Image 1 (tube, rainbow, N blue to C red):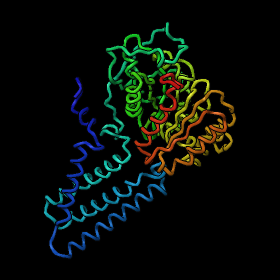
Image 2 (image 1 turned 90 degrees about the horizontal axis):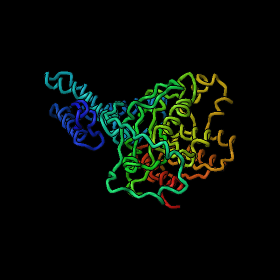
Image 3 (image 1 turned 90 degrees about the vertical axis):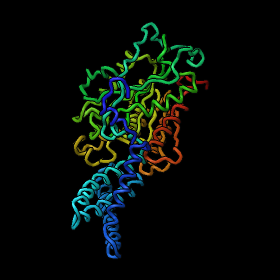
Image 4 (image 1 turned 60 degrees about the horizontal axis):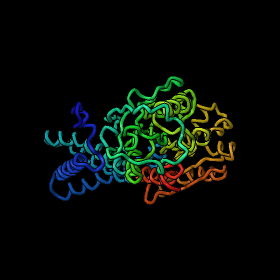
Length: 439
């Protein structure tokens, strides 16, 4: 446990993907289910158990189907694992409920405790399939990351160098082997927008942690919804990148475009919040002044995953003079695409023309040609709900004159494999442009 950490910090940092804690939960759930299954002797009980398991599973399938296809509670299709875990949980809960009748008090107690246990087990199983919430805290949107006070850059070095960094950089002997990830101390001010963003996180590569550090490229990153401004994913990818490039990598600032994990302000200025003003007039000026980053659009990337990927496409299309590069990983095609009719009615007062104006593909067509913009669009090859939208964005970028890359991440769905695979591909493409490797 880190110095100053509490017992709660240790609990929130528990690995819920494949660590001992979640394995113990799976094992306990299996043992409890076995206990509840073997209640009585004879074929009558066996047949009862079979019926209970079938009925419970069918109820689970029905509930999940209604949640996905009728209520759209998850913003679209879900990972295949949910269609196994949820029916399994309902089957176990049905058996537990049956054990409440005509049983001794201790069996009743175990049956009652089994209901939340089976529910939690299914939640952990589905979460592990996505891999986007690696700790117990992240499942509840609680961060235990340390704070980082980024080094203040030397104002005398503000001009971008004429030569690429890889050609002039020599790592000092005391350079750390890895970068640092943490919450930005003091946060990113929202002076202009007033948008109540959650604290941003930052990744500083090894080259940023030495004395007289060079100015490095900047990445402004946004995650999905529901989600958090979590820098561990891009930080892990960039740490591997830095290890192969003498400690050089972009500084990544992961910001909150939501305000609340349950909200979606659409990355626009609206009654839901001034997110666009926050990004363009609060975040970008602060990052350029406060962080040791290169200033030109060639060295400035807007990136995002899922909801954040749609935001990246929007900002990259609308502000090429600021963001010379956009990296959209598994992006939504445009703001509010999952709830188009509601967004049209509630945010745009039914004005389809106004809604169309903020769609990235339409912005690209209107602003074309783009003389010096690089765009990378990636998506999991199995992510059928997002593949076509991503392809349409890439087609629009190509037609608008952007230097465009489209990459389907092998074997990935809308999950952590798509996220990390997309980021890896993106920085491989951007590396020469950012001056971090030879063309």
